Length: 76
Image (tube, rainbow, N blue to C red; front, side, top):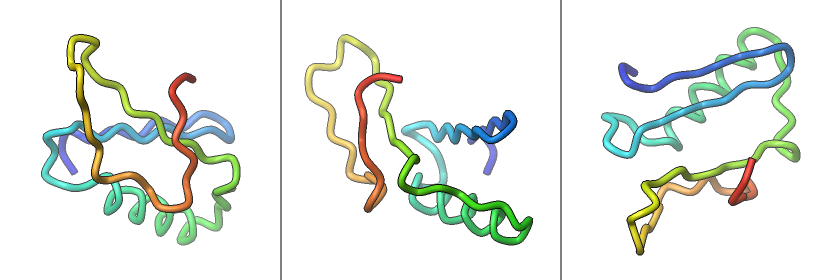
């Protein structure tokens, strides 16, 4: 989807989905997993992490699109 970016390096990948995107992070993550399966690449979900970057002035932020079964972290 336009505006969403995926970076790959060796065995690491990063999926960036803006808050105001036309597609949800859950949908984009499903596409990523399907792409990996189609290309015979295994994603180790036990090592997969989710982090939400937000503007520091926002006091309250709710992310309703957390990835089920993926650990959320606060730092990289």
